[in-house]
Length: 335
Image (cartoon, rainbow, N blue to C red; front, side, top):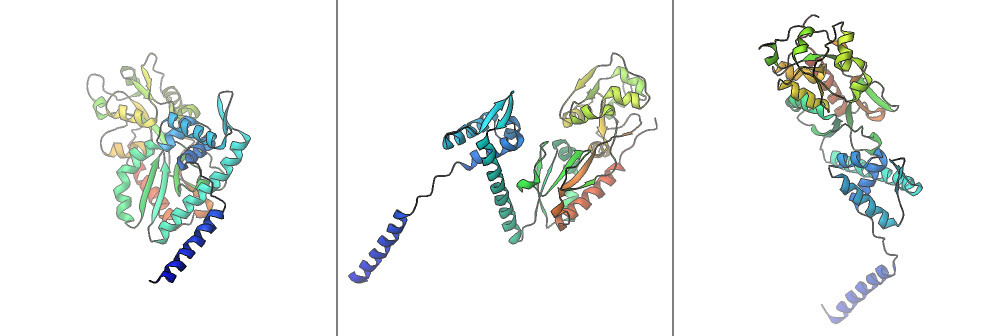
């Protein structure tokens, strides 16, 4: 290349550099991790719950929020009567970044689907995922080999507006407006124990035999809202005599209670869907009845706008069919 050509190239480079130099510099953005931490805190109004959702420590979330406040030079989060609240600036920023994160999630999902990937993002409670979904997964994968599942097991009710999930299985009486919900079969509560307790020095045969055993329950939301979900309420509703002086222990979440019962530590109260697979596998048995209907139930939930999405329809239909099959596995003796 001759000298004039070199000179022309140099001129072109200098010209481009001049444009960049004179352009308004792009401001440095805050850390994406800090933004995600703040969005979670703003939505959940809890450092602990935000930390659980993000799978980090509460201290890490606190440091991310502080870093974001230092970046802006103003407070975004405040304490009011020992409760987390957002400042006026924090409220405004939360609304804006929530929209941005939603668009980011939707854009990512759209790109994955555009290249042919079929990914269904599901959220549900950890106990349901462990005791019911996991034993059923082989069935789903065999029936729908083209659909990949991304399951998040959490008790936090995720906001579909954030675009993080496509469908959820939620335990509730009421479903908020704008969501499409389908109840999953019947939902009853009944005693369960390890087969080991049906034998030995004090075999379980009737409710009166409970006086020789530890009664295991849980203090989750169901315990608070459903009187028959705890032993005293269930015995009363089932017209069984009270068990004065019986030892009672409480294990939460519900999965811990079921695990302790399966190990023979005592007698618990279980829901239809949660106990079915363990009963079929011989881990749990029902020593006596009756099975009493609960007022709340599991629902397959998604936004109304995506209720007819083929993959969501396939998942919903599969869940309903498997739940019906699970209910058929329950063997409750006559009261």
